[in-house]
Length: 261
Image (cartoon, rainbow, N blue to C red):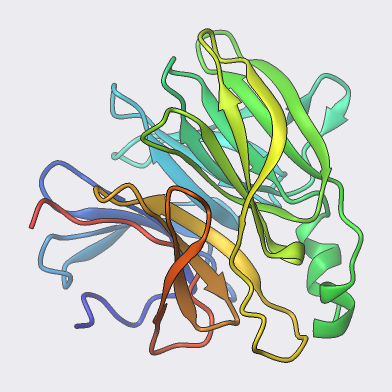
């Protein structure tokens, strides 16, 4: 079923306690946070930011948004439309393309940065994108004091991010089809990067495609939206492909689960 339509390149769906949803829209001429009612019909724009990419909500109801161009930054917003630029980089290193984010077990915010300015990426053709060199990054942000720590870099277009039921951190890299795992330790320190699983369909010819957003199901499997592959690839706890769920469109970008049932 189609829950809501007519949206401008929606991403980052987050379910609210009243069964309504928050998303970002980043279609041409439209860059905003949008609230969609539980019926899928009622909607209102909370705030326009530029080119928002993803969002997450903390325990106090604050909305954290990755903004990719205006400037590349982490924003903090509220349901009544207020928004502020929270941080724009790590020390002297500015963010390039803040992409996706999630909260960790200890309450810190973990964020991917794709490692290339969004404007530069948009100028590349599909083959140039497929072979592009990016300095994808992974950050940990303490929202209580704005401390930003770079945990990893040199990744092939860092994109989706999620904590698993094993409390480990999982990060997707679009250009090589990989989902990586970082062992989480008490206090928020993550271990070395490990290859967990690859979602690229080997039976398809070479083309630009790869993992985008992802989410863990209650079954313990990882559901990964694979852009330009037209499916959600499901990885089991061992990292092997359990199945591929074909989508109606060619480029699914995010996954979120609804209320129980």
